[in-house]
Length: 184
Length: 195
Image (cartoon, rainbow over all chains, first blue to last red; front, side, top):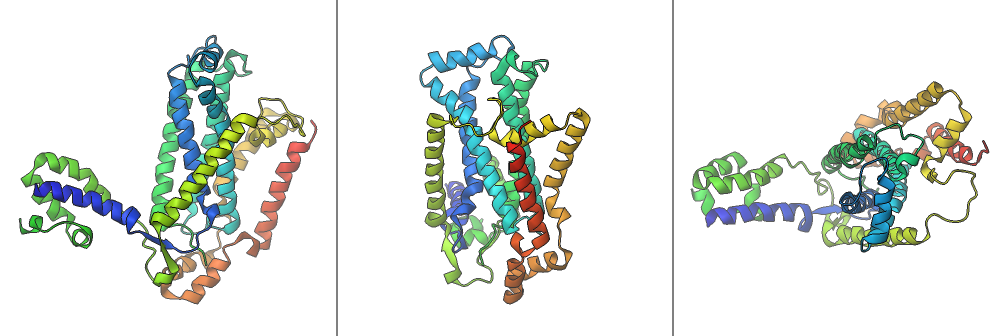
């Protein structure tokens, strides 16, 4: 019983330290939320992508047909597919806005150089993610159809997301330890 | 065991030695020890920035609900924006001559590919641009201000910290500002070039 209280104490401490008792500098800009919005956009892509994984067939001949099946036969499949197709545009717009703010406000400076490096790598990975997604949706109609669809699919659903997860972890850990950019 | 009898909450837990706590817990309940191990590791390696250092209460605001609600509100806007894009995207208005499968954010790369016919040179330019982009903070490092601004921003000298922070903005460094602006204008112009 005492141990249960101890365990609850740790959880309570984590919540209090990180959320309820946490104090931050006053007057933070609304534009400072762009990084968080990029994460939200990524989570939307992740959710819709997992849904599409159940129906997509990674084959040069059946890829396009399977996407059409999702759009026409699966309930709300058209909506999920559409969100997944439009999402990268919104996500990249958020990431670019976030990076432009960082650039113009000089937040990349010491001690935050590695934040910029990890963020820039995330942007490049996002662009590669979009490109592999395009190749998958194009199937054998793509000009790069010599690349096996299964290889592109593995990159799109596992390779690049894992790399992105790693870079995001590093990015968030560093932001947490050095703190957000404080207003004057 | 006397330590376990104390309710381990808030300020009390902060003073508890993690190693002592883990030893006692491992002897008392191995199963709970495993469950708690991860949480304790999180607590141990947690090095979250403390914003309260060197600041008066008027300079601070609570994360919950202020910052959290800010994020929730902008997230709702993002969802509305995305739903709007689902309905209206792609726009029928086409000011730029481009194939349908090239998105707006890859347009400079596409136009560059059209302009540079040598594949090796094209890839070299792309890789070089990516390297310059990633290593930007190291290329424009200002040794005179960087280290001192970080240490002084901790609160040792308020006025100096303020001065060094003011210098952070890009428009306070005209050469860098000119480079960035001209690069952005070049990229936008590249999108409108007819190839």
